[in-house]
Image (cartoon, rainbow, N blue to C red; front, top):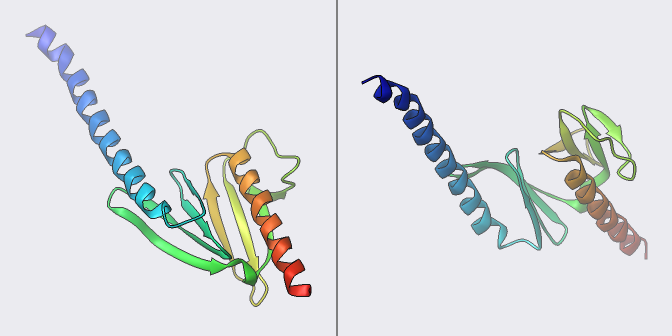
Length: 144
């Protein structure tokens, strides 16, 4: 009987881990299906982000699917900032650690901005560099 009582917490932990793993698998599968429509996409526990042409779509992954999806055009973006702990940092000189990591998109027609959260600073920096390059290409095409 004592051995059974010792194994019971392990059994409960095993079932809890299985349930959590199943939820995460459902999130990843929903993302995989969603990401097929994009040229470039990212998934992490905080947000999904997809780029198709000049449009960016982002939202939050859940086991039932993606929620709070928002789409905006890079043509409307004035600046892109990498924020680590709510401070703008250079994508070429990134810090090693940070609690909150976000790409901030500032729009030209308003004071509003969109902040897309990331779990890793290097991943956010790569996306920031890439999207900044796309933004510069769009501006050079408009000026011609």
